[in-house]
Length: 497
Image (tube, rainbow, N blue to C red; front, side):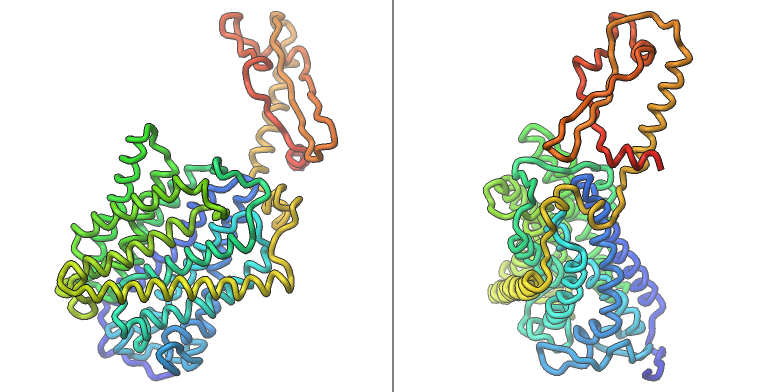
């Protein structure tokens, strides 16, 4: 290891960067909850796992050689090297990346960005990709796509950085890369067997609200931490971040209200779009522009989601529209509204401030990210498809990955609860033999997974029906007026163990 040099370290900066690292790391489990609440119940555990596994695979890759590829001693303006593999630099002083705190802290901080980027892609391939190919994909994708792009945009000699492309916290490196890669992956995999462009399978919106709130909090470290110090620039990025999130939320809710209803899932998407759009610009623009950026980006994504039913691809959780299009809109508007006095060290004036060439630099970064992500994703998935297969079998997909890939179901507790409830009800019913007779009935209905087999109904004991019948003017009329509750054979089996 290199010798330790702590003479120039600022404890405040170091504390802020380590705090930001924790905040950004929090965003990956937050994303898991955000996605998990939006998918069908048969895939919720799998969706949580697709984000969770990135925390292991990607960070291990980052320590072994990923950080060195992205920020190590460069071999050219396009690539790093193995010079810092396995983090052989110790706590050495680095004036380029961490001038006031240890380089190890900078490595950990950037590693959390590397973790969440492939996790974002998982939202586009819900319920139809095999687990092993997915894990191989995120390892290879981080190596050949994310690491080089991070070097080009943020590396000391990166060619996009020297060209003049502005990306304060990851509009191109994180959001455009993940959005385009999600789109390409969803096209290669094809549509789900039970795909319906006019419906949603969201089953647990409290999960999604929780994930949204935690993402919002975590984005504090994502953007304000990118100032690389506890400074006025970090404060600017902080206020722009929360301003854009709040604006995105309000904009989405207002549009929903005008159209007649306020959807909870939409209200969760609004602040995410605002956060995505402000990410490349948060350290280069004034707060007033953050409001406008969020309004424009949110309106664009809202319209695109309305048109989704006409699109011929199955991007399950709209990664391409929310992160890809939101990131593109934000990167483009950075070229319009940036001001050099806001960030003297790394900023430039945009087109609104007399420097229209900045727009071209932003477009160069956008096109590079789009093309590079598309080529890398296709270049990894297509060989995997021909070598080992990446798409689930139809019967496994219809049953859900929770059972077929993991052998578990998150509904097992509920199944046991139902079983216990029925047992208790029957016991209570048997104790009440003198209940007044009436015409109400209560039945259990079973629908087999095999469509060639007949379903059947099991009537509960006669005394049970009377026990749960209300007076005549308030009868449940369960058989006639309410939906039948369906139990799968798998649930019944699990509830007895």
